[in-house]
Length: 569
Image (cartoon, rainbow, N blue to C red; front, side, top):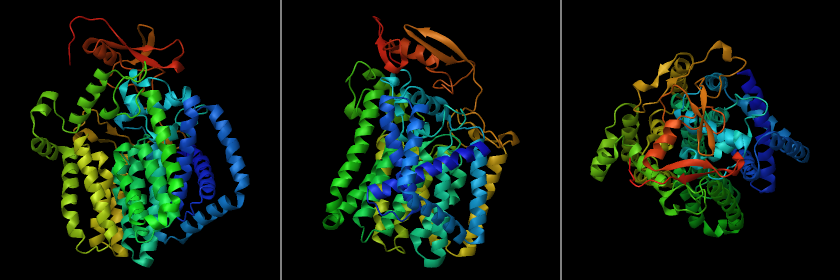
């Protein structure tokens, strides 16, 4: 915990500096601290992503970053110092209950992220993606080694830029820090709600009620928790300035949305919000168009470049852009296999069953899934059906716009991969909206926050097996805090895995020993991939991953093996 806290202090100072500089250089006139923090993190992530195109995110990057930090600190000394003082003043102005609640949640967040991670994606590609960025930067055709590596998120770029891998190998906690920022934003807005009575402040203030769900993501660099926090910030900004958005607020909203999309493109419907504003308030916002074009071009350029290097295609995953653009592009047959797995994953069906089901039967199957998946699927649909009733009491048009955006988001998920976590931001916001209609008195809200904190104490300090609540075969036992983590956190992988060195053609790789996770690479040395996975694609697709040269930095390609009888899985 202590080492994580020390690293957080430096990270917080860094992104505060970058946010301060970004606010001035881009003329954003930011008033919300979390917007300035996110702006700083976004700019730092774009800088790190650009650096990773040419080199690794290692000590060289951090040396330059430290120099830039001092330059920014000198140039904007009065501004960033004033910002820190204002943050302290905001904390002091909280009432005693909210102060105590925030401190308690902060300690629990620290304890949780110091414990062993249990998000299964962490063991398949989060750790490996971050390690590749730290050691080599963006590597051509990395997707050929393990196609999950093609899902490199902007959040993994941010984590790799701020994990100090050359100093210590156990920092993996940026998601937890961002959740802490989100909770502080919530308690601030709740304090203001008690004074103003504005509903959108109450909705954001109720966000910590979802902490029991969000804690499952923060012990690993999951992009999901960041999307959930940013959704509340974006929706707050949209409602708060709906009637008369200034060009500066419009730029802020656009930047937040672009950063969210760079982190996770399943949140693409959020882009409708700045587009809606631009159309509705065209005359007052048209002067900001060049700045918006700059933001969009920079984000799209980095996104496409990242995909071209790692996947060999402009957009991944996407059927529209599939094909062989380079010698290291992912073979079409493996790409097709990926899409087949992706579309049926949310229904837990075999390919044969999926193809035989009608759309209505798929919907019923999805709705009737057991355990946590079915629960949140039903909850998402129920909230979408009930929400129009909310608008009998809530007259502001902004809420209706947000509702239709979430409705479109649900429709797009059904067309791609209907996993409840991709709509959990909508579930959380609609849930808080509904709660705000019935619970709006100070004592009642305080009671709800206290009750919601009880499960957190249990989950952080008592081991809970999530297999009892989830359909996912490899959902892990919830990690719990132990006294040995007070100073130094648990390793970045839940497992102390051993690896064997395996040769396949010109590729020498490391495969985990004694495990049953087909996609698992854990925290293995580079390059790591499960030998069973390599054999699977060799047997059924007659393809093996190979190095493009003797240098790992030059990347990988898939080599076609001669075979007369082609089989399919």
